[in-house]
Length: 306
Image 1 (cartoon, helix red, strand yellow):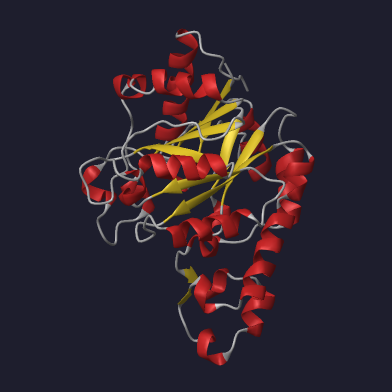
Image 2: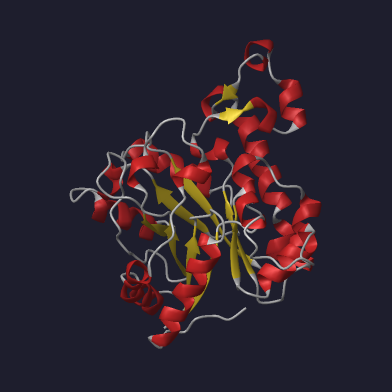
């Protein structure tokens, strides 16, 4: 059975910083990361979805964590067909935009020439190289939106994104249920297996038009992933709901226990299984990540320690 790593999808969320989880002397970015890494062996960096990381920052992340620590990274929003604010683009890209695009609030990948998009991919990949070189790179998560439907065309777009990360592991999360319908799920899993792409299993609200079923599937021998988004159904597809409200959910022990056999099955098929709490409100995520690790340990699963 492979190793199981637990953690959260952020260590810098504002509501976590004010929750009292960090001790008073963990009051800088450096000391917070050091404290977090003393409690968990894994973290997901979600800031890389909102903007390209700086290589110097990646150097600091690698330097401030133990040798066995692992970082997962969320792919930049432009790469997954999400609307991207002009201000989130690298300065040299913004400066080179034609006037017809500079006045837009948001831009999509299709609005930019292929060579420009390729250059942004290169900058993103290069910025994370210090983490990779330090042996602390987990995977880059591509989270596709609810309008990204199951199709051969979209499979090809996933493969095109994959080509930009030849030396990084890539994991894929879907927000469009058509990928996991009874008709398409095995086709989806086969596609991921054939292209060495890890499937991101999710726990999220059920019963909405965007709900993905809580299926656990190992599609690579190296990595499997589970992300917990909470079960707050009333905010999952609501418009104009902020991140804090959408993920404001604390799992009960019984709800986490449901996933223990699923995680163990994933670990039986892969070298590493990453279990991440994305219910990043107050201390909910860190609390549930600790609970999940204890439940797995109690069942005899090989859970990595910080």
